[in-house]
Length: 397
Image (tube, rainbow, N blue to C red; front, side, top):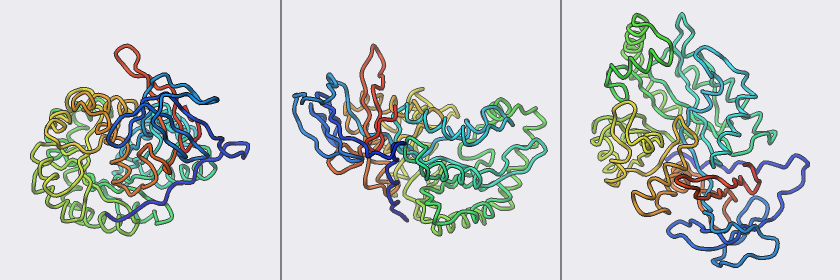
């Protein structure tokens, strides 16, 4: 693995005062390997003490048996793209889009996010797949520097192999951008995620308002780009990830051979393998497996790929990503907790394990000395409701 990211400085309260200390008591605290009745004391941005007790000290918040879980760590979300383009070819101002995206994630318990941005453009007459990552990343980094964002943000560059401009766009980034992840994305129709051309047709025509003729042209364009640039762009993206000090991930591996290629690049993180064969090959190669929370919640893939629950039942699921529904991340962990009858194991999939996978050693657990990223959750009827979210000790939701 290439990197260990330095922690993001704790955001400052607007008046410049330090974050006050507080205590959350009489809670069911989810630790690495067990659940205790206890209390957490926070000082500044850090968990200062953790004690197993049912007492409620004077001045503490009585959680009345609610769960306290670590802040969620999200490695791959398309949510920001939805905010900057809420409808096809409708561009929204970036600064308010970033702030709204940040607030939405905070409201779902996500306290660390790797914002996925596509690099690699495909100019078309309808303007699809325009270049945007460098400008958007600069705006995000600017907002982060001012303390305007509620949670901790890092950059995840989705390297689109089927493009004309991938390497030029990657070259616009440098180590100073602290890129956390680079994932190798090959969306050539007829393979990986889009083996089922009927599913691809429905997805593309529905999302992008394509006609049948548009879709045929789209497929031909992507297949042509893959033929012209695929090998060079894949090798170039691997080299760029090393230059940037980023963790490198594969995406949509489908066959054992594709996993072997990923392993040969030194990849130790696989996003959304599409088959049981690929997932088993990832496990044999020591590659951590990420699956989508919507797949967990829905009980299957919208692209007819392997079910995340099937992988979970076979011990082939390490990390869960919210993908395109931020609120699904916590819900998926709670669903896995029921499947496995093991809440700590399920919570590790959305906190400790993703943090470790990208070299963040200061978060992902409720433990003394860790960042005070804490989520308070209450069971209401047949669902769960967030009662509070703290990021680096600051209440953000």
